[in-house]
Image 1 (cartoon, rainbow, N blue to C red):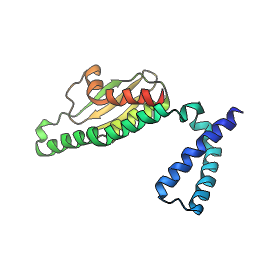
Image 2: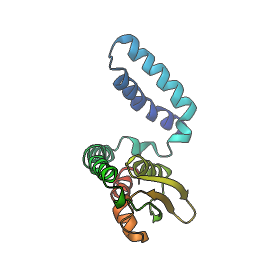
Image 3: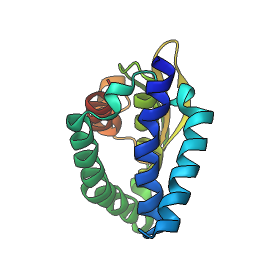
Length: 167
């Protein structure tokens, strides 16, 4: 019964995602979306979802939307401006690899944080130590080399939202 719930829980979001990306609501596209979503759900649902009830929690979706808007506007704009300044004044660059602790548990939360760091200009996660719970991040303008300072500057915001969305 649990496997069926997990299988069925994944189909509607996959159909919605397919229709969103195709930009079409034709009967053909809807039928194709359902077929593709069913196949993908059958193949991957047990690996992707452990608790299907969380998938439809509107509070988690709201936090994800808030994070996406914040990340794609404010965070990215600040990072791009910072890197742009480094292009014109390269002496301000202080590249370093810093160790940043994290406290989230789920693989999805860890992945969200690592991807957010890597997609932000000027930082890239080069390694994740899951046993000791550290990210190793190459930071183009390292302003604070301490673990606490680096976390505050690089990943604290991402971790806060990852916790609200996935844990």
